Amino acid sequence: MASASYDARRGELTTYFDRTAVEAWSRLTSDAPVSRIRATVRAGRDAMRATLLSWLPADMTGLRLLDAGCGTGALSVEAARRGAEVVAIDVSPTLVGLAQERLPAIPGAGRIDFRVGDMLDPGLGRFDHVVAMDSLIHYRAADIARALAVLGARTDGSVLFTVAPRTALLTLMHAAGQFFPRGDRSPAIVPVTEHGLRRRISSEHALDGFAWARSHRINSGFYLSNAIALTRSSPPPCGEGPGVGVVQEEPRSPILRDPHPYPSPQAGGEPGGGRT
Image 1 (cartoon, rainbow, N blue to C red):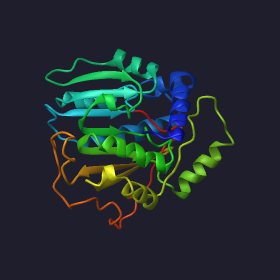
Image 2: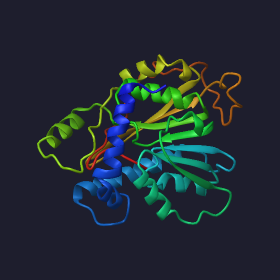
Image 3: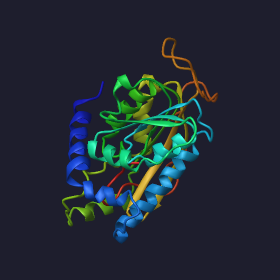
């Protein structure tokens, strides 16, 4: 169950992405000319999307993917082109509408089911893979870990997500941004430390069967975000469905045992965080 702080934050994000900055996000996620700052955000988001897609199977025929915070659907389209059955969900009806308008013809078995709502809705069913690109960066570490637990409990393969790493650069960028308020700036990104996030995740029993498999940082001007892959190292509990694409690695989650910190710089930016 989501916390009150998660629900409150989701409401703020709904207002932002569906009303306050619709035009800004429409341009950012298109080929339309944008400012130099937003061009760095666009380039960073493109690089992050490519990274997350590279962590998914090249052939996804017969696999079910949740694009959690799908935005205008760019990642969903690429996954569907690989044959995936994609459920693409976002809190913003406007962004989902743009995704449907921009949807190209997808040959083969892949398809996309666009929905408006909460990515944690249990009614969405089970998945082989979940991707949450920049859709958790506005939440506190505790809410991120809880959201991952809810998603992980119905995921048989991997949960790929991004966070805003707590770095001196990001702290400075966001402090500077407070002096130049804009009506279309997104709700504040919440930087987190790797150690703190690992500790939070290790306390979520629903994630005991997952291993912290890899991470990669994208730093592009005003875009700074860290991709993380949690992969199943043991099958889901009995009654939760068959294990699909299970990764046989260490038993139990080695989430606190990887000594390597976030590799290189990254995280949100103007107009803020992300949607895929």
